[in-house]
Image (tube, rainbow, N blue to C red):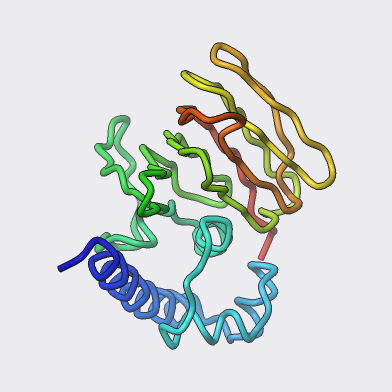
Length: 199
């Protein structure tokens, strides 16, 4: 099996799991397709495509869905129940949510559940790859810190380059992207704070 075939199979598996989970959660929370579309800020067509397993949702779309159901992204994609642990310590399982054949990847290390979601990410982007994201929910904030290499960040019409040891605060409720700023791979960490709209 080639890397491309394996990636396509993994993507199909993820789409099927997400389809079932979203349908189940929507029914449990007694939401119509229109209601879920309103709560997430997605079109009804996108919600239908996700439930039919015909969509390949971006990280931004996964975040919107998770916030709408008061879950973490890992809970949304995993086999966990909708119940959130009340304990002071809870082990989480990291998940790679974006990967390219060239070696770029975005790994969700940990996240909280609830209407306000806090996430920790680690990223690697190789030269030539660009990660483009749709707008997150209104007011979403990101903190980005570059560990190695140089990172080109574009948020809306503004672009900034960060070098190793530098960091930035971003408001990512508009389209944004990340790329290596030169001919070397860039490694960076990211924290995301996203608040869901009130139901």
